[in-house]
Length: 128
Length: 366
Image (tube, rainbow over all chains, first blue to last red; front, side, top):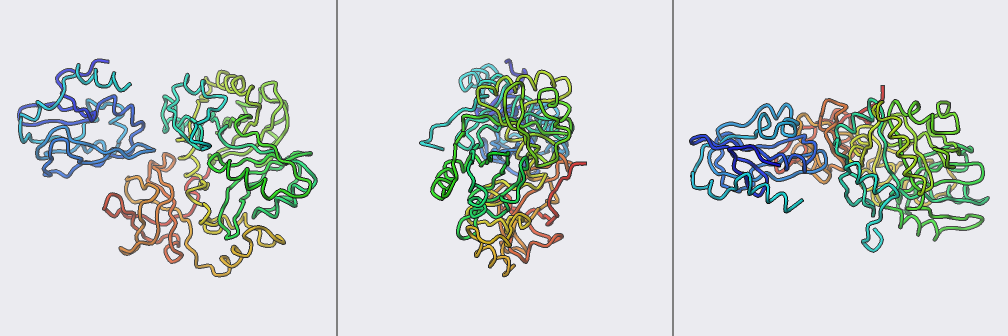
């Protein structure tokens, strides 16, 4: 399955969309399918400084708690308030309305540690 | 889990074909949910009906003139007073009053069916064999016979065309021996979801046909296969205990809030003295219902605090779709923290989240 264009991916199944100095982060469709019905998402506070690949929150399904690792470092500018009210947005629209948070990039070079959509497709094909 | 080798129920291939997410449970490879997901499956059971494979639970048959008197000596609830075609919840206890297993007895005219938790099947089979005396004969059909449950408000209409008896006339906690999809089996009007429903005990080699027939005939009316994940949320909302969570070898039936099933007036049973002493003392830690103010799920093992001091721990927790996705839990807390309305905290990843002690069950069918 082809991934949406213009995104970069981590091996922890998060996506990043870079727009200037701002990166939007979410989890992939593969991740939300694997997790099942998402009922709670715990995100970093606005203003928090995130280290790339650091453990920065959790995503909880009915049955399980999963750690959330940030695919990119930087200062948290905004979190998606809509998913507090309705966490199932992450299941329904993981690449759109179900985005998680935005950061002000600390280092553009960190995008070099991420994968293209094609490379990510190959990764999930391997683990299937 | 015997020798760590996972077993499969007669319906395993059907679960795979239906997109079941298979996990180890009680020594079997069981579906935790299907492609539709836990919340959709939960919704089907509350509004229409769901179909469950519970064949991992053990079916023991008991025969002989002394079964009732013998079983009365090993359990907290009455056995001998059961009439033919009655079903009754019961608990086998250890000498300290702890729960060895919680079970259901189904009485037929000439024999008894005993349903035991999958996780306790091996332990219980040894326990029964060790204590057998008089005219009591035991047969272990665990993994041989199948158990299919249909649960939800539409269960009668969906099941009736497939069975020989008048299931609409059955009362809650009764059973029938009849034909189910043309094969001989036992039907109990019992379940673990807080809804109307039936449990079907059929030979393993007939399970596929019964499952397929029910599902195909009722798909249009909204019957869907449901896994153990939905079942756990449904039973928690309905305030039904799960062995290993709300009770175990160290948590007694009295602590689990099951005093209604503990008949201290019975002449003698294993653990009676310990339970009588506990009842008299009255100050024991006990299971309560908690409702958190926020949405964070409270998971088994999380600490429960009262005024910053540990008062107990979470034993089961989930979000409750029947209560607007509120976060609900059971907790084992000290007696002083158990009154309805008491404000407590649940420690989640180092942060305390406020909660209130509430009445059980969380959900009652309309």
